[in-house]
Image (cartoon, rainbow over all chains, first blue to last red; front, side, top):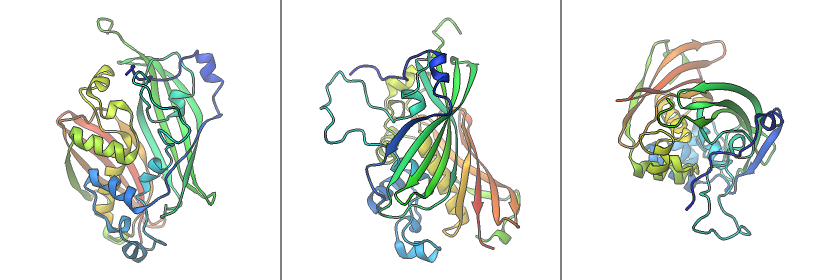
Length: 185
Length: 135
């Protein structure tokens, strides 16, 4: 297995060319359903019957069993493999979560991590709903941190369902940088 | 929970949860963030983290649990964030999700919350949230 990539390499001028543009779009492969909700609740030890029982959700004012609000991210992620894709090879680069401002926007950086996220929720997600996500690069701020020199890239993600209704709008701040080598700190 | 029952400064019942590699693997499979830093010790350490660490979706979901257990099924979660990650929540850490009511807006029918995560490493994450409640 080769080392994972930490982003698309390029110049800061190339990064700037993507500002204000849609840099990625993903279509979640799985509609909202009980099984994926239960598996999402499990590692959080999260017991709440509006997410598992339609009658309880209706009693709380929802139209049906409702997915947790923050599960919108999960339903908007594109598949890691789908029919038609090439078979994996042992020395392939590992597939990571698709964050367009890391993997589709070039920058002269070899590491990255998320520092802040903000999300506003609108329409609830019900069983059968399907989610798509459009990502835009909306801000670039150059900065030097302890871990290295780079820039904060802000990604605006708009999540919509098949009806065209907006489910959520999220802002994700990613720090992309060149790591400080040992002895250079 | 009704809006009229809530006052600024009220504490949300805290949640304790241990971060184990098994939990991170289960979480990654369920929330679909399969980035290696969240389940591969070697890759996580190469970025300066002490070990594989909890991802943003887990933190968001745990804050949702904190709010939901306090506010009840009728509350509507309108906003989470800014959620800021300052210190890693890594394998071997016992973490606590906590929160207090920052303010109540009776006219708008909303409550603003201040929430955070604590571990032996300190305050690792902070997050605001906006909830809508019936009166």
